[in-house]
Length: 266
Image 1 (cartoon, one colour):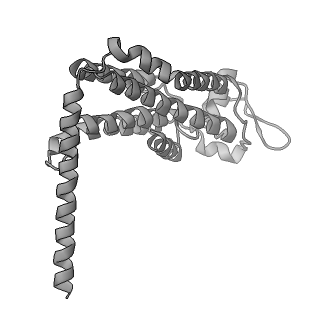
Image 2: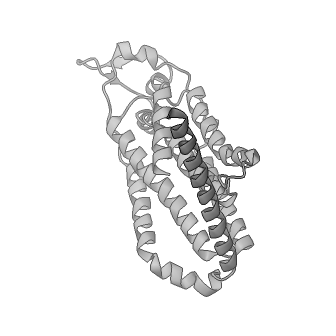
Image 3: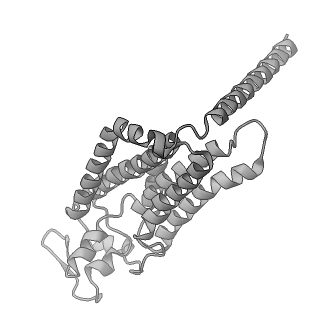
């Protein structure tokens, strides 16, 4: 009886797999027939009008993100005994802030454009760019909102607060009174979660999903090389997250939370 059930389950699995592969191949053939029919010249205006409200919401997200970077974060209580864990060296970024949108947005967009010139599908180009921007901006807004609300000190907060390492001042409640540069101190209260990591996993995670579809990585043919390609963006995002801990700009929990946010909202 158990053998009969096992054989039946195996047969059902194989039939389901064959049907899935057949559906994927049929969809691929149908898609190939439509290639070149939807170009920027023929359907570009139609696509733009149809999704005008989406782009307006996208612009609103940009405005919110700018505001979140201007306002001050919550200045969490930092006592003298807490400073022992916040004395890591104040270092420069291995991955500069300006580089984040370059690899998380610009490089994926360049890949989208290359695919467009090969397939001439304006819907694919438009939706991929819109999806990428929404993925990154929604992640950025949520990440910076949490940063400002939590106000967790960075691992190098001591040197942001007391650049000379001297004149350590605490008020009557035991809270630190910093005398460093105001902008440096403000940035020192934005440890949780990691923005670099969140942006990286949102943008490069979206690119990974996009490549898996274009390369047909799961088309039942078992090409391991395709999996290596689609996992490459995720590897880069992971290395960016590790660099944030190595630079002492984030605790490991910050990087973990940023990665989860980026993956979830991609």
